[in-house]
Length: 239
Image 1 (tube, one colour):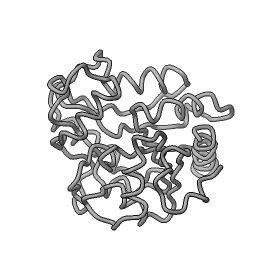
Image 2: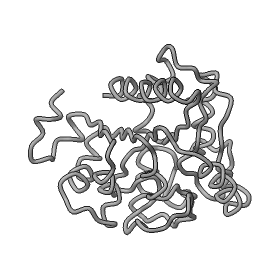
Image 3: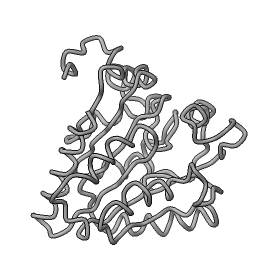
């Protein structure tokens, strides 16, 4: 699954560079993205110096050297593994509102060619927990993380306890993600199966934030057998 998603992502990057001389991408983080990013950064013939990377989300108040820092994650798993030269980190450690505004201006300055996203156990998209704001045009928001989201971070091993998980984060808005020319959603593992069913087969609703991906004309959802297990008809995901 991760290799198939990486092939699709690499094609989108190459196509953007061929058409416009550069590619602007958005990268998600977290356990679900590890194998995908490993495969993508190992893919040959990507002109990484022509790629500009934007940050999907980051915790408020978390230092960059914390194991759960998404800036640390992206540096170690993308930047240090490639010849990427342009990236925009969300510094939530100091002035989160200013970081959101500054990176938001850079992001809104041009179109995004491809966004890599995941789906949370509560159906969140980035850190837009339910009920998500489907209306705001702001590129980034300061959001309060709900308990289900924070428990997921503990369950994935990023934090020792719920009390250690920050209560707020900077998150790219739903509408900003939907402005991307292409979206590649990578969602493995059985713990995501209920959220996948809710977002694929339920109503498109702020209570199921990732369901909004169904309104985007060029989104591909990559599932494995475990994450697709609760869908009523999983034949399309048999591969």
